[in-house]
Image (cartoon, rainbow, N blue to C red; front, top):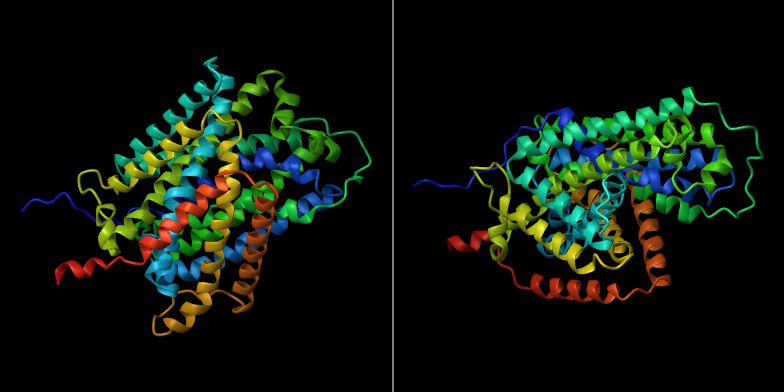
Length: 447
C-alpha cells in the first residue's frame, strides 16, 4: 500500500547547523538593545564586559546542551529532555506553551519588526494595515518555503544568514576602520548602573542557540556536528557582538551610543549619508527574515515530536514523504501566528506585551532543561555519553543559576507591567494542565 508518511533524514551539515544558530540568534536585538544597555551601565568598559558575560553564559549553556543533544539526538530537543527527566505531562506542557504562546508571540513580534523596516524601504502608506500585510506575507512565504522541504528551508536559512553576517561585518569595518573616531569625551555616565536590566537585554539578544536541538535527528554525524555547531556558533556570535559594539563606540563614543535610537543607522549614516537609512533598513529586514525562517524551521519539529508520542495529537506527528517536511505542524504553527498577527496587529505594543508575559514561561522551561542534566545523569546512567560537559557539576550549576535569575527577572518585570494579556496566558496554561491529565501514549492504539 502506498503511504505518504515519511521520516526525518540526516541531511543537515555542520554549515547548515551553524547557519541555523546564527540565523536565529543574530536578530534585530543587536540593533535595538545596545543603546538601552549603554544607558544602564556607567561606561564603555562595562558595556563590553556585559556583552562578554552574555557570551560566556551562552557558551556555558551551549556546553550543557551539547551533552543533552548528543546523548538524545532526536527531533524535539527540549521536549525530549523534559519528557525523559520529568515525564510525559511536563513534555506536553512545554509543547503546549510553545505552540499557543511562546513561539507565535516571538515569530509575530519579529514579523512586525520586519514590517516596520520594510515599510521604510517600500511604504504602503496604510498605517497598521500595511504593517500587518508585510507581517502576514513574511510568515506565509517562509512557511511555504519550509513546507516545500528541508532542502529549501535550509538553503533559504544559509543564504539569509550569510547576507546578515556580511552586513554586520560591513558595520564593523566601517565603524572600526573607515570613519573618523568620535572625539575624546568623558566616558563615565551619571546614570546609576542597572545590571539586572542590562543582563536581561543581553541574554535576550543571545537567545536562540538552543534551537539546534530541535532538529538533532536531521543533523549528519550528530554526536560531532551538534557539539561543534553549538560551540562554534555561540563563540562566533559572541565575537560578532563584541566587535559590533566596539564599532559603535569607536564611531559614536559611549555617550553617543547611549543617546542613539539606532546605533547601527548612525554608524552607517556617517559613511553613506542619507542612503544609510535604506541600507540599514534592508539589513534589518534580512536579519528578521533569518530569525523568522529559523524559528519556523526548528520549532515545527517540537510539535512533530509530540505527535509521535501522544495519541490525541498523533496527527501532528506526520512527516510528509512528498514534501520531506512536517507539513501539518508547519501549517498549524503558521495558523496560530497569523491569528495573533491579525487579532493584535492594530495595537501598538500588543506583541511586546505578549512577549513580556510569555518570557517567564520560556525561562521556567529553560530552567527545567538546565536541571534535567543532573537528573538524566542519574536516571539514564546506563546510556553512554559521547560528550560530557566540562567541569561538571559547576558548569550546569552556573547555567541553572543564570536561568533562575532570568526567571525571577522576567516575573518581576511582568508583575510591574500588569497587562491584560496575563489572563490569556493563565487560562491557556490551565487548559493545558487539564488536557495533560488524560493522554494515553501512541502505543496504546495497538492494544
